[in-house]
Length: 265
Image 1: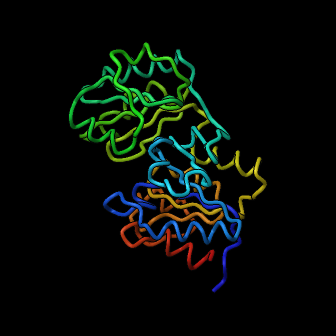
Image 2: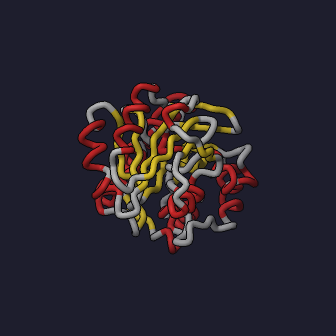
């Protein structure tokens, strides 16, 4: 079997590297060690917060790369390599617009923490899955931090209930992406997982042809486009399958592990 010539691998988390119960298979750490022994870099590329990711990958967090918050923050060995922030006036406008959407819950994502102004139990339970450093504040407009993203949640569907309003207002000036069935992210116009990978290619010296990535949802499209070995999961959104060069088995069947073992190791 022909092996892929890969120096860098990025994998989305939910629906991709994690199983259907949002859990990481413990055998990942043996796989990671094998990649490290071959000088192949592995990055978790997720909409999740950096502080959430380092808990999931605790045994290797001081060696591993994290493309967090949908590409707006890249951390490696505890150091920031790259970030793509949003200016404060834009942040305030996004928050004010989001507040006008009935049923929408807001997470303001800064470099130091995430910030929320809701105490809704269902929202808090959902936020806790992705934001492990999260502060309640009375007014999001009064927060002082460097902001990288505004994440919006709507339990009846982000594409149906949030996207039409946010897209109409901010699509011309910001990156607006439906990142999951109930989540939508607003970021700097230049921000994406793909932009982060492009930056790493230019600074760390690996090429498009040496890049492999795995994804399942619309916030993975740019990452797949920046990777020659682009894999959509079998369970992926149809648009993701149409963008990727290859199809991996589903996350339920540990598709990322299967492809890496067969094609890289």
